[in-house]
Image (cartoon, rainbow, N blue to C red; front, side, top):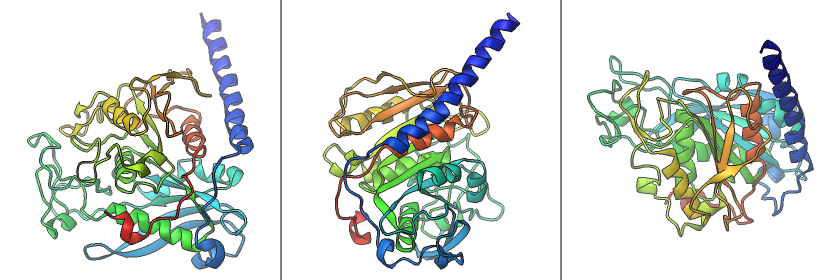
Length: 385
């Protein structure tokens, strides 16, 4: 029996080693259809010199950004810029935006992932925006997090179970409620401003802007691709689901005739035993009880309808199938948009991920396969509608 276990483990390691090289080579060999959308930074950008670095050299560090929200607010983001990437007008670079979880920090997310490493070999820029914590002194504080447009909505939690309180930015806008758990700054404006700031400094391919996020960051990823349609070519939320009533957007409803939404491919990844954001939706348990989430299947079916895909997901193969966490994926076939709506499950709870670096490989593999249809990038005035 011990010999059999050892043999199975060895087989898994060999398979993982093969997948690690094969998926990467597949992206390097890929001829992505469509046209690049060079950003203004391709002609007028200062490159890493704008952040105090040497032209053509790698840069890693914090970048401050002041934006006009309901009041001026100082925000920031962490950048991983590989040497020679995003500095040539002849090679616009893809942009990957990664959103941290509740209570986390942008730089710690950057350190704990391999996006910067893959950016070197595949030629993309990684950006990690920083969430805010403006909890009222003495109130319930869940730490740094993201406003996903639900502040003031008392239908998204079981009010006698949650422990959060109102944040200062919500008090100032009259948006406090029994289910408040984050600040009320406009994250759509912030992320859009981050994209604009990066695109004005570096040579970015605006047809290849991607977003991924974990937990609360995954919730924000869902919110962004619905409320900023036509901005992201693909999205990968990790163990993050919309709150009740926001699976298809509520105020910023994802409707079937919204052409721009059909440009975004989606891969949702989730642990089968997650009790914080259960796969089946409903009320959360674990260490954060009382929040009510949309079922994963319902969310994906909504996206499948927008992309005019088959109504039922079927099994699909990837480089990472099986393994110790029984990784398995499903997608909706026949999407007339040419994009994939896909989901993958693995054994584990909230915050767990497939091991041996597979999580970052899967994320990068899926995102970099897509680009937006050639079109004139939206202006700030037209995107917030």
